Length: 486
Image (cartoon, rainbow, N blue to C red):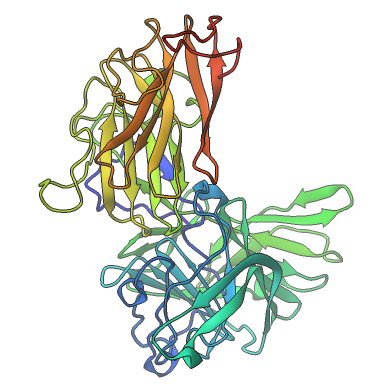
């Protein structure tokens, strides 16, 4: 699905930054009207669950009282597309009707024996997506598979009897026989949420039918995507990939979403070998626009057919906050709110120096608000090669600059560029985006182009790229390179 948030005061021309994995399955088992007027609340890592949870009116009953923050073993400095999708079995941490739940940046997914509730964003502005899988078996067996190494813990209140420890996490959840011969599987694949309808030999894919509940009826656009408008943005279910597997690989089968006369939606599938299993595999993604009245498209800025590696770049921290770095020509790029006397602090660089400059932006876990945002650049062209977050939530950004006055720190390895032209830079902003904790050139007697960035668990920074420089280190810290590499 694709969510396009337009409440950031941004332009619509900027580069689209894909937030795959921020949302989970819309197509699930029966998103029916919730029984008995219950309110579901989702604990999100690093956030007060009472603040972040979405109230779903008339949906699932009162809480068991075991809500709280989740402690994860996974490292927090992962590229967004590599964030693992985690499903937790309900072991008392939420309402008894819930079989599995998943959490993430701005969403909550609750899977019961006969329904699914997907919450988007924080209340009261957040939206709830509900869909009923018409005619599905309410007694479908639900199980987790592909157990992950992480564990979740809930330590809420001062009563140890209500704490929940060592809850396993799974990469997949399977509903067996939601329709005769049809299973439904949720899983994370390459930073995206996918849900497969596995149609067994001899089973009929035409039995799959679903309908949404909400103020607006979904539509199917010209790309074959199923589109649903919500208060939090536009939800987009990508046109399904349909295939059969054999010893020679996957054979695609033509098919699409279809709207039925009774108001439900389903799949229309072309002729296929009904003696073998069929997989209907829609893909869900999550996106937002960020930018101003100029350009944030790196390929447009650099005048190349494809953007430079790491421009733009995305990272995520342990609390699912989102970090973006790229290049902009916009003089009105959205920055950290003023005044500087109130938190958060003002941007490190509150104005465009000379277009294009680098931008570094932190979004909240829902992707709906800017935590901080700043320019970073000088009198030349500045582009990014990557962004990362260290263990103290400082933001590391690297790239290429032609600026003679690129911002550097007093402790810089190389406080001035060795020669005119393009050279690499590495900068570290503090956790507020207000202070430049460290910044340096990496330059020699040739030309350098940064291509990639990483930060390890000891907060050491690694930069890769290319150089034509041949000079070796000396007392003035000329760029220490072997020809061809940074």
